[in-house]
Image (tube, rainbow, N blue to C red; front, side, top):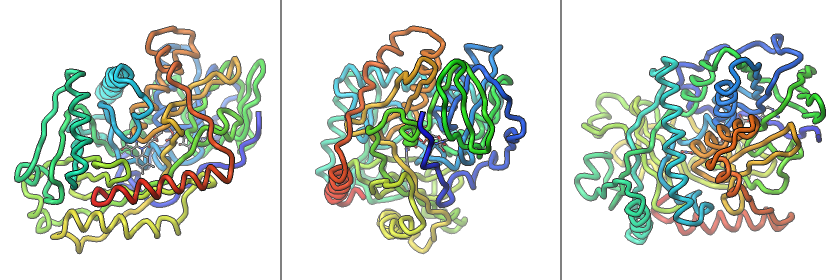
Length: 441
Ligand SMILES: Cc1cc2nc3c(=O)[nH]c(=O)nc-3n(C[C@H](O)[C@H](O)[C@H](O)COP(=O)(O)OP(=O)(O)OC[C@H]3O[C@@H](n4cnc5c(N)ncnc54)[C@H](O)[C@@H]3O)c2cc1C
């Protein structure tokens, strides 16, 4: 297979800085063995689920996970921290029929429970995991149609919900910015780096985790080998590549990912005096009434987190300059919502990649008898990519199921147009979406 040209990098500090697991020591590169049964490339939520499921299915097998950068400094650790159970507009357009959305809801609920059960069983309840649900908040009347659309789907799924408006919405969120919100209770809000690192720190004993160990090439064959950038080589029976937007670097699933950069920022912690403005407000999170709108959270440690801005991720990376340019929009979103707290500065600002495909469909494939890959193709990726990781491990192990069939059936990412149409088209579309998002940003 081809040699990787672009490797992940880290730009901007984020949730990892707030994680109690930040300094957890994984295995040093000197302990990499010559051979494993299974190797997982990439330690995001997809890699976490794949490695753990393989270990559950094969307690006697040796499994290695190789991550290019620090676990939690990747996109899985840099998202907004919503593990969403219900259909989510910025992403679920791919699951086009109601039946597909319903199936996703069932599968998302399953995978959230699996993660939560693991957290409890492994005694890491100290991770920042809050089963507090989510709001879909609208600042403009024209966005109410999104709430109406979701209510229709939720009713058909027999899923409970609540519409919150006026003083009650202010009482719950501490902002008068929004006109109306739809609340559903199944979403979990997390510090994504904390939960990811926490989960990797309690992998079963037969899983060996190596961070800052980029994989340079996979040589398929019998046996298949993984060649690391540090010069080591490890043989194995099968490899699962869960490297997100970097999967095509290995020559797998080329021309389907169209990753989009988005930016997040946290205020510093509010002081006791500042907290008077948030009196009685519990931690909460909302997605916006437009796909290009601002995601907002009030965190457990009394900060406001905002995420917005989209740009096409040329060269699979962001930069300090792009992050600088994203700040005014992030500031505006924050100050518009919390004018009384506008003096509070941002402590961390960062950028990350949302791994999109043109039709929001995931990728799940067998590239070679011993090489598999999976990645989601949309914004609500934590639950989806965990699901794909879980079931790709079952696929590798030869375990058939209706759920695996469903995921394989919908894994039909559309092929990207050639350059320069791709970049021009992607940038024009993102500009158009942002322009239309108006006050939802
Ligand atoms: C700002 C932002 C906000 C978001 N908010 C949300 C949200 O609230 N909820 C939600 O569900 N989703 C959200 N997402 C999307 C979510 O983060 C992704 O869908 C998710 O991270 C995908 O996980 P993954 O494991 O498939 O891929 P990744 O998280 O990209 O993990 C792939 C891993 O592979 C590693 N890798 C790549 N190449 C190599 C190599 N050669 N060798 C070894 N390792 C390699 C990478 O370093 C990375 O750690 C957001 C994304 C961004 C950027």
